[in-house]
Length: 194
Image (cartoon, rainbow, N blue to C red):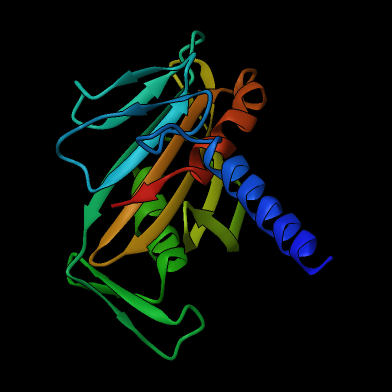
């Protein structure tokens, strides 16, 4: 009876391992996704197979049939250090210190964007409980903007790591935004920092 229990436990462990590893191929690409490959990145980005990867623009990006797209931009900071503020760290960028990625977004990134484009409106912001891959220090923002008479909805996830801020951006027309949010969620969940 004891041998039977040990064999059953061993078999259960093997089945679990096989189930977990079958979700990715031998190169770590999740099932149903393809990797957007660039020799200049320090991360791995996977998109659904029906999206078209593009690295020719200088950004790592991909788009759908309706031209909705995602991209990743990496900003190099002057340093990210631990702190006793609410965020637990500070970011120094362009000689200004920000109390975490949320203050960086609000006081610099979004402010700069709103100075460049008129009619930018912040719709939603999530400054805790967000992640980009395994990075749980991320913040997520959703805003709208009108460009040449077309209304766009944009979601950005900003995640600090080492001395960089990774900016994941999903852009779609307002009417197409919701149709790709499940794909975008899968993309951000499978993001890997190298």
